[in-house]
Length: 181
Ligand code: FES
Image (cartoon, rainbow, N blue to C red; front, side, top):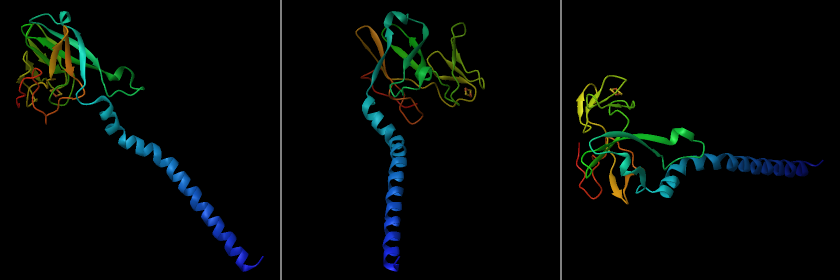
């Protein structure tokens, strides 16, 4: 075997090796890129303007606070029951409602409603909130987060693609002016 033939064979093997490395790199990169861009594409699919129904108004009697659930619009097929999100609905006077995130504004534990004392209580560190969601006592520095809502065809809808967070204004009735906490 001549030195020239040996060189060209080596060069060919190097090229094949590079090609195979490139193919493996692309195969590995596709799921990673899909994972990284999925929040953006999913967000576009569901839209942050998604209004989801919590059910008919008859489920929420005037003057009462009831638990409701909705399905997370950004759900994945494998999310199962974890995609069912609970919230508290307060029917103030049949005209005005409040829909509270179930998570405590301190560290996110689910708060419970106690009709006897008209308080939301957090089991984790003793945070308490009045019936209108404002802070009563304990570690939370603010009231419960609220969803924007509207009433359509006898149903209560919330803007569910938009999770309430400290950076957002306090929710209000649809069309109403949001106010800051
Ligand atoms: S998580 Fe509710 S008081 Fe700490």
